[in-house]
Amino acid sequence: MFDVALSEAGAKVVLTSSSDENYPPENMLDGKPETFWISTGMFPQEFILSFPGLMNIKTIRLFCFHVRGLSIHRSILQDPQDFEVMDERELTPSDASLQMEEFKFDSTTARHMKFVIKSGFDHFVSVHKLHVDGTAVRE
Image (cartoon, rainbow, N blue to C red; front, side):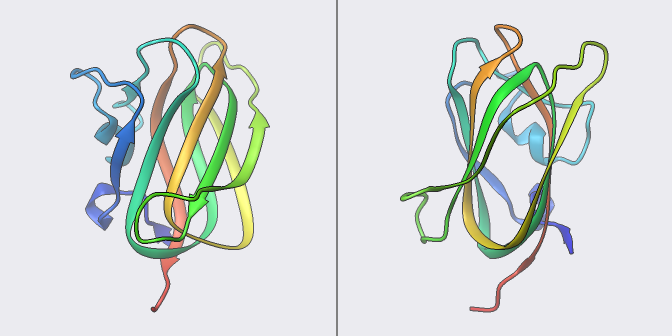
């Protein structure tokens, strides 16, 4: 298993519902918790992560701030469409430090993942790091 959500592993953020040029979505995939993507307010907010191929997904760790309601979806198609829900939950607030939420899966695959931030504990939320443990599927 390795982090398949790193930009150096070929992962890309192909869509975000908002963007600030000082905090671009690519910051979520650089592996550094001190850089981040920030929303521009209002909910829901979402972003789509695409892998270079189909991946076996075991664990997702999301390092974020002020995220309350979150759902994660997957698509196995060539294009990012026809998503199905993988997990959905309410996160626990954290005032002074980053939230770290872990999602575990027995056996699931994805070529694209959509993260929908349904609500926040504040008007703005940030995603500092997205870590996805997985391996490439031989097609």
